[in-house]
Amino acid sequence: MSTPAREAARAAVPRRRPLGAIYSGNARIVLLRGLIATKSSTWAVVVSGFFEPVFYLLAMGIGLGTYIGDVTLPGGETVTYAAYIAPALLAVSAMNGAVFDSTWNVFFKLRFSKLYRTMLTTPLGPLDVAGGEMAYAMLRGVAYAGGFLLVMQVLGLNGSWSALLALPAVVLIAFAFAAVGMAITSFMRTFQQMDWITFVMLPMFLFSATFYPITVYPEAIQWLVMALPLWHCVELVRGLTLGVMDGALLVHVGYLVAMVVLGVVVATRRLRALFQD
Image (cartoon, rainbow, N blue to C red; front, side, top):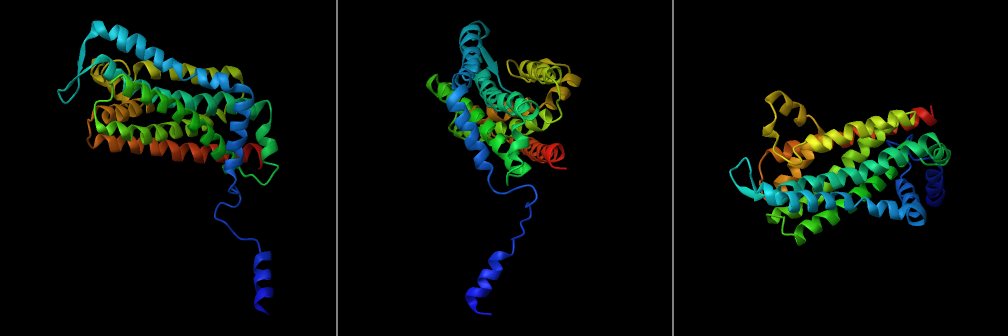
């Protein structure tokens, strides 16, 4: 067989890819669709979500912090109350931005508009859909957190050069919550069930050492708080912005990486089970 004929025959044989059954390499199409939809209809809602943690910082950090005074860190250093809660609110910014889109928006597309059913009748696979939706949710979380980090810099609340590392940290935080949020939402069937997400998110926001040190709790409650994902996010970002660098940061990173892997795997399998099997 001549060389051109051999090459033509080789091209005619479909290439096997390790994830060929679930991934076509077009997750960016799902992301692009989300960006176009935001530009045309929901951009005002998206932008408004940035201001909530900023208001918390101004009201509690700058306002209430005047009466609270300084906070002593575990290493003995003291920082202003605003500098103490600002990293926590930075982590909350990344979490909220990612969760908004990976839960309620995904729920609507999954159960009402049937958008994913339509997508999966095209060459897109479940991992394309899950990856695109998570990337969009992650972008929103990173946009909120990036803007909040800039606010912290303007207000002089970043205490170390290592605050620069908080930016990749919030990318990981947003990815982790986007992945887990979409995975959990894939099991929800009614609006009442979706309310359970809010029921969990609010106390996690209030009690994950966001506004005061975890040492105020009894030891048993401390272990419960340390099991929450937001506590790991807060400790990771707080350590980076205040320059408290130790081995515990790697534990927090490992926790978030595990969330990413678990969320991507579960969300992909659920989409495949719901619409392809």
